[in-house]
Length: 111
Length: 114
Image (cartoon, rainbow over all chains, first blue to last red):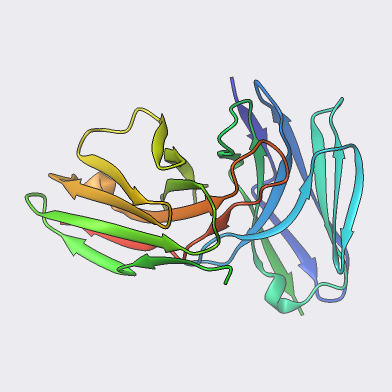
């Protein structure tokens, strides 16, 4: 079976740091992706991990532990425009590159 | 050009209508996808095309019929839809291959079935 879990909602303050966790149990693993989606818009790619460890991209970092089936997305120096849903997605065992999405975490950034 | 273009952006159709959603990309990607997204839910995979051939159909009802006429275009033909089919339909594309190939999403077509 395929199961990807992340918190439904989170709230944080402008300028702060927030960590969004994702745990997964999938029949195969070919990488974990984080996407940002503003309401009514398409998902946009944020980061990708296939090996254990931390990937840093400006204000965004993503961490992966394959043995624990665990990832997190770290957002630093939060801005109001970071208010969005954050989707954790796993590329499963099939070679076509299709993504299995978690339910998403709705992040609200407050002044 | 890192865009995936979908048309139309909005579509309202009756249950007896036939309509088509269109998706286009010029990034040289040979994998293209249709996802369906209901409000406050994650995208759910419908179809995957790899090298213009249908490789995955996630048990989608036959009232949805995908077509990939060439490596840049992906269509979704709609016929006899139900109100519960109202959703955001997202097209995506990526390189073929198991690792590292991020999927680029179009802006979606917001479909309302009346």
